[in-house]
Amino acid sequence: MKKFLFPCVVLFALTSCNDEKKEAAVLTVLPRLVEAPAAGDTVDIAVTSTVDWTVTSANTAWCTVAPASGSNDGTFQVTVLDNPNTTTRETTITVAGGGLEQTIPVEQEARTLVLTEEAMLGDWAVTEQYSGSDGLDYVIGLYIMFTNNDNALIFMNPTDPNVSTPGTWSIAGNVLTISGELGNLIFEVSETSTPEGTWLKCNLIHALLLPEGGLLCKFEKVVND
Image 1 (cartoon, rainbow, N blue to C red):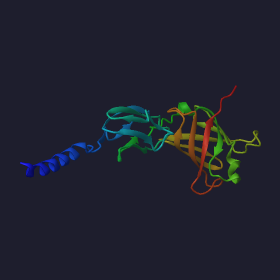
Image 2: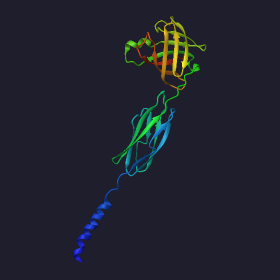
Image 3: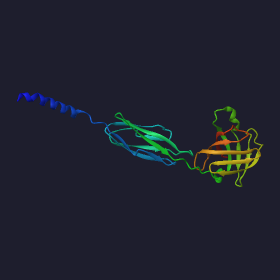
Image 4: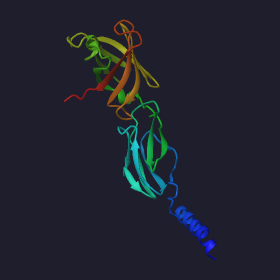
C-alpha cells in the first residue's frame, strides 16, 4: 500500500499547481470603430476585461476619453468635437491592460462648407497669414467690402484706406473669387469657424501679389460699431 503513496502525492501537487495558475488576461472592446459626424458626437465603448486598464487618445485636441481608466468590465466615453475643416480627420483610442492592447480608430466626417452670398455680405479683412515669413505680412489688412449686387470694393493697401479698386465677386462651392482691375483674388476656403463663417481659413491666390501656389491666411468678418 505504501508504494502507491509517493505517486499520489506528486499527482496531487501537480494538480494543485495547475489550479493556482492565473487565468489568461482578457481585454476586448466594442465597438471597434468610432465614426463621428462633422458636428461631433459622444460614443460609449464597452470594455470586457479581467484586468485593470487605461484609455488614451492620440489627439486630445478634438477627441477625448472619460474615464481614463477602469477595472474588469466597464465602459468609457469617447467625445469627438465639432470638425471645422472641410476635410475628414482621424485619430486612435488605445485601451491597454494586463499586457494586452486594443486600438480603436476614430474617423470624423468633413464639414460641409456653407459659403453663401448672404453670409459674405459686409466687410471682411485678412487678419493673419501663416507662411512663417514676415515678408508676406503686407497681405494683412487687405480689406474687401461685399454688397448684395455682386459688387465689391477692394482696399489692397492697408496703409492707405482712401485707395480702393472696384470689382465683382462670386462663389463656386468653397471658392470665393473677387475680380478687379488688378486681376482675380481667389480665396480657397479650407476651414470655417461656423457653417455660416465669421472667419475663414483660406488659401489666397493672386498671380501678381502672392507666391506661386497661394498664401494660407485668415479672412475675418469685420464687426463695425
